[in-house]
Length: 118
Length: 165
Length: 182
Image (cartoon, rainbow over all chains, first blue to last red; front, side):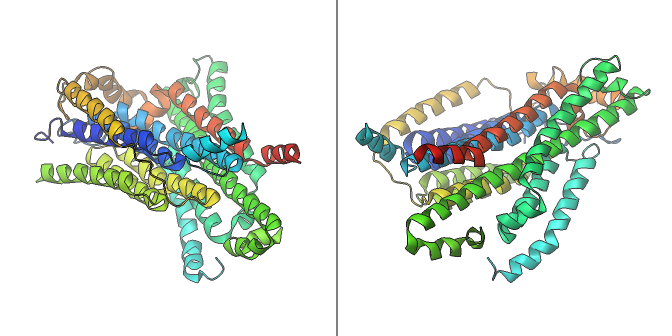
């Protein structure tokens, strides 16, 4: 891990920006949710990378091991993943209702159908 | 889905193992990787696999929606209840050391109980999420079937349970 | 050798992300997101976060893929419609990305034992856990005992999100909206 240095963070930023790019560019709401999920996972990797200790092992105590990785980011991210899927489900449920109301999941089509209705 | 014999047989073999593994992850979480969150998701995934293969209606007979909704609240209540019990025994909220006379054993008991609460909530929320999405799809299919007569065959073909109700 | 494997694993993750950005088929993007999540779980194992890897493998590759696929089944959406306005967002994400990389130059290297994040409360957790709680998995002891309030909040959020989905898609909301329509 020592030779990598900041490489983890750069990959994280790349993922973060690809998630953001999908959220901005795509007009499809489902694709936007997938983009948000990519963004979210990149933050998870960011936290876990911060908690990594060179030469350490997973934080499960054993007699002959003295160096452990940082368990605190693991705890935060563990709960964040499950909360993430629950909120993703909420977003998808909203999309389903939008589809029922406007018969489309594409932003542009929703706007045009809304304008024609007004 | 009725023709997928391989899927049905493999699922029947796998689902008990998945549920057993979820229980192992739940109660072995103190000693190895695992805990309530993981166990809950695996437990929920077992039921979702069952629903994907045997249909939503059969799954609702196995584990009824009202039971699922009740249990997803019961897990949070169990978690918060452990905190209240520790208040009554003279400690701080969620201080497990006062649960038993030996503080370390009290911590063990408290962690086991609240992990159980987490597991129950996560598992049943996952199942109820799936019920909500799959149930909504059935309604949509039925609505299409009633408005457009020629779509009925297609809708019931896509979901054999849509016809039965 | 290990460094090369780590390098390749992280680069692979970027390739999956590019694939998701590029794909127009929503089904393909959903499936590729499942693979991406599984790949994330691999990286979490490399970074010593076994509990997190466990959760990510079960949630990302399992439940969220199923949920996205069921949304696709309800809405019947297949292809994403592309509107050609890709230059400006590319510029914005490029600038933000460059700013983030510039900011990362001041960060401690990955795996640095003396990084501020590894010095504050964590040694206390690692040392105290054996005597106070006496269970080997420190992640569980921090999750359930030292940060019990935090986890109670998270469980409540999950429960609330479940209620939200039921309000949006459950039986009662449908009955009411149908009555209003009639």
